[in-house]
Length: 356
Image (cartoon, rainbow, N blue to C red; front, top):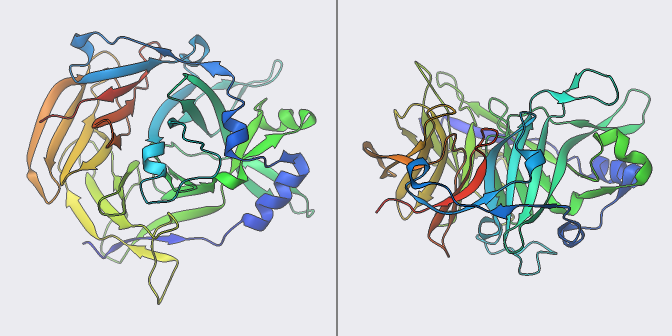
């Protein structure tokens, strides 16, 4: 089963990204974005009954506790620098990136709901300042002009790997964007991106696949395991759906590592069939797998833990996190697990103490 699961990288859209960026704005880089954060999160207290393992929490601006956007994935600068590559413009800041998908977002004027796809929220963990960045795909129209479109993915997980951001796209695998491609829109172009000041075009796609006789992996969520230099991908499953976790090795540049025969094809190095229903996120820590599971909008979430190579020994910590915990990111320096919670007005970015 291990080698039967794979992911294939598409051709780079970098030249097209450059054309789009030149038409709609400039590419001033990550440092400029982090100097242009326009919202403020606040440190929050989560009642112990709602999260027994919560060590710290951030609450979002009131405008971001609505039904329109739903947080899903999380990654931090500890992921970004974990493989030994420090992104240009980081400047020593501690930053979290949270991915979200849009539900019914009102259109301009009296128009109906508009599908805005997915976005990434850059949060400075030192100051609480943050900004949303719309994820877009560069396209060339039939008449030869270049444009951009929303990226309609669930964004259930995100990994900051060097200068790359990988965003989970469920049945499609994942989409990958490079931070050098951050675009600051000109004043006249904000209407082309639903009013967003910043957009991030995706440069390549990584399409999940499987050999004949093996069910393709659903890329529901993902995280970075620095120790094994791998992308850890898991499936959300209920009922008869599969609940696997797979590892895909990463190259030094932060992208899935291909082979000498085919640099675009990466095969899974390990697959674990967990049997854990409703998984929302995974983190690999010191040979153990930590998984979040949710129980609806009114009951706290759980942390489930097992040794990486033996999924039979899962141990559940109930009420470990607030309602609706999602993707996980491990912070080795703090020895904490970060997860966003998704439900409106019960929505935090929390750091959890892992079970002993």
